[in-house]
Amino acid sequence: MTRTDTTGLSKTWRIGSIFGGGLIVLIVLFFVSLCYGEASIPLHTVIEALTQRQNTLEHNMVWDLRMPRTVIGILAGGALAIAGALLQAITKNPLAASDTLGINAGAYFVVVLGAVMFPGLLHQAPFLFAAAGGLLAAVLAYFMGGGRAGTPIRLALAGLIVSMVLGSFTGALHIFYSFETQGLFLWGSGSLVQNDWSGTTYAWSWVVGLSVIAVLLSRQFDVLDLDESTSTSLGQKVSLTRAVGIVLAVLLSTITVSVIGPIGFVGLVAPHLVRLSGLKMHRWVLPGSFLWGALLLIGADVLAKMIHKSSMDLPTGAVMALIGAPWLIWLILRKMKLPSGIGGQSSMNIGVRSRKLPFGRLATIFACCAVLLTVFSLMFGGMRIPVGDMLSGLFGGESANSALLQFRIPRTLVAAGAGIALAVSGVLIQLAVRNPLADASIIGVSSGAGFGALAVIIVWPGLPIYMLPIAAIAGATVSAAVIFFLSWNKHLNPSVVILLGIAVSAIGSAGIQVLIIQGSLWGSTGYIWLTGSTYARNWGQVATILAFLLVKRFITERFMHFSKELSIYYLTKKRYSDGFKFLISCLEKSTLINNKSYIIKCMKLYESYREYASFDVKTAYRKLINEVDQDEA
Image 1 (tube, rainbow, N blue to C red):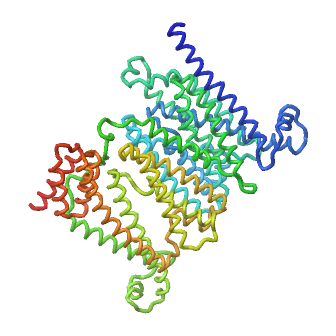
Image 2: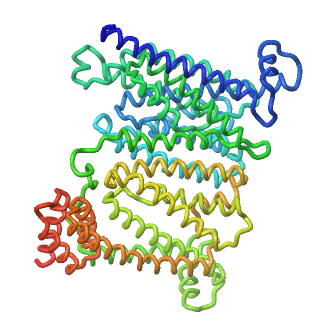
Image 3: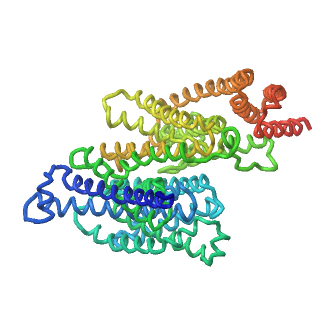
């Protein structure tokens, strides 16, 4: 057998395994989905209902409830998968998908906004609202990510920012218009529940038509794998191909969101599963992605129906996130290529101001702003307090608003303390991983803390109230430990830490969605608390957060000392890469605390081992020299 014959046989085997194996699994899941639910239906009854329908309860349940749900799952999974494959080809970004680019979040936000502002129009044309929001979010994320010149990590971060901002707006609409949006929370978590064939009838023509167009244009999408100059020389209109691909991806994603809500990770996982088999041409990748996207979503829905409470299934979107986030972690750790050098890029720069304000002047400006904001916080609320009454109440005088101030003062102090704690935690995280974009919310710590606290409220409601912060700390600690453990072999590369944080955040958010729905918390005070609220805080909570701040100050000081001692230890043991990694933290911390003696100690440490220093250490060293010279001048 010749080499050509062997290659052809291998390709045939790959195509057969992707399409033949996937189709067999999809057929099995199709029948499992029809059999399994609140009430189990035997397989022979399902087959009888499909071939010889009769007017019985089981047959009507199969045709009117479970069949629409299963068919819309196949259509939605295929649409999201093709959208993900198109976005990955257009942006040349393996992390591109409708959820990572913010398309799902944009569509969801505009649909919720339409439910509040234009309920009649939304009922007639939900797809128009979803398409407008998805297209706007995609354009924002694409240009914030640098457009065609953007890197995968930058585009992923841009999509994350767009999703977080629009998610905040959506949460605010749920809180302020809970009555108008009460039916949208479960839908917003991604649910395949269908009460009739209307959603399937509405979506199938769009999904099938757009998918066929994408497959017919597959040859044009293949050219996008080449660089732009080569594609142009072959007579291809690259800009037009990109525009058509983006429009197709947005329409496929938003038609899905308008029917079943936002569901993530299908468009990320399915195309990679197909490409891992060795298929690269889009005439195979697109239909293969459709098949495996349908398989993934139906499989997630079957799992959601297996774990349910009473008549309420878990949201399929949350289950899909629990499946897809580990895949994203694997993709980051196994497939992400780092730049050459020790651990790749060990730090990330976002640029600095060429002219810096003196520390004293900057502190004065921020102190004045803090005082003004505190005054405004005490004055404004449901009822405005005049300045005179406020000052009188603060300094012990009697006024008509003294009692009202006793509610607003703890709320203001708790907000200030929480801001201090979050800011300090951000500084520590950024110093530890040398990443200016690291933050508790981005690297999964916030979602872990929220999941831990919510688990106490819903799963163990009988526990004493002091277990709530302990559970939150435990959840945050587990999230951070998972991220840093997985990224340690990548030398805490900033891009790896951020992307792992996105994956862990998705897992935590999925768990939170499950707990909210199981506890029926949407629209309640528990949901409002989860979105972040300082409402009705008291003096006991002021004392609690003050105690945490004092503990954090002690830990911060010990952390700074520990970094310098650890760098010395590693350097003396000739583990130079680890030693200089912590030395960079020492140098960066010394600029923040404005301690010249600490700077000098770090400089001496650098001088002793400068022949082994990496580029990052030399840059930090020169920066410190310039700052010391400027201070002395």
